[in-house]
Image (cartoon, rainbow, N blue to C red; front, side, top):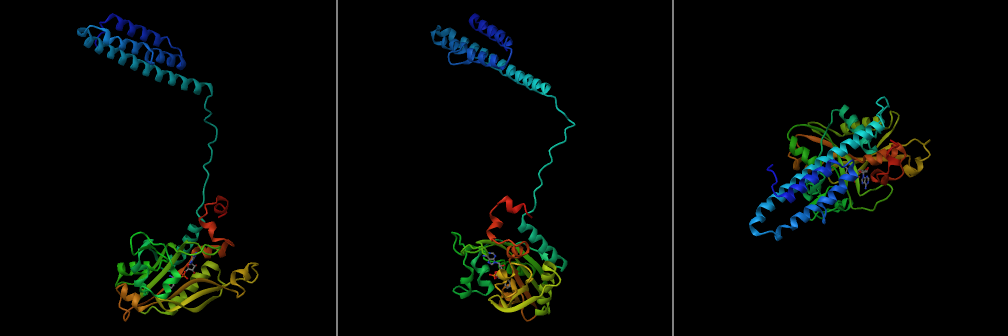
Length: 345
Ligand code: FA5
């Protein structure tokens, strides 16, 4: 930097630099800063002189004053940095590190009980040759209802009231069954063996057994000569893998617009379980899923020819299954984020 020729400014620079190097610690540096750069500091005073000078001297003085300001400012910054490094070093030396001290073990979390249940279900179906497919949670009315054989005003829609978005016809899916349509369109005319897991939403009263948000796992098998016997065999094998080999499985006739014939599947519940009566409402049987042979109209909507191929589908609620498994008496616990509950699994 150019030398400072104005004697007042040269003196200011010299005393400022000298005073700075005399500062012994951070507190002294801060005092220095107020003295030179504070509102009533030396630097402001030097600047205030400017208008009192003859016009011919102002420019040169102003430029030099700015240089002094810059130099002192930079020197202060450096001194402060050096001081904080010194302080850090002193604190490290004062309490030396013991590198032999064992580290703190990180706290291990665990998988959410819903995730565990889902993975167990995927594992069983994977062993039977089913692939896992994810399909969308935000659906259109056409796929959630119409293509599943529920035209507008179909009475079955009342069972599946949902949440609608502000875009007409776009809603949160009420079940994983619309995934059937997506998978069929993707794989038609080839055979399919897939499970479609995911979150579903229903506008209904929350109770200990029903949530407005819950998971389902849909199953789908399509090919030549697929029969009700295949459906029964698949579900029976699944139920026994999940609940035990000695479990009895019962098929009851039921109704879903997208399957024909439709069934509901129950398993027998051990009478020794003190909760058996409450869970089975005294019948000894407990419902685990809805299922059936895919309705010809739905096969056609997915691009298949129902004269050539047939298929079965099922849909289950893994939260209800986990509740049975672990004697969980309130479905709200799943999404309540209470660690006392979640860390039990
Ligand atoms: C259905 O949703 C059909 N889509 C199932 C199906 C698929 C039938 C394919 C035929 C072929 P349902 O409404 O019964 O059916 O629901 C299926 C399962 O989801 C129920 O058995 C239950 O386990 C679970 N579920 C339904 N509503 C709730 C809720 N509000 N909270 C928690 N789980 C629920």
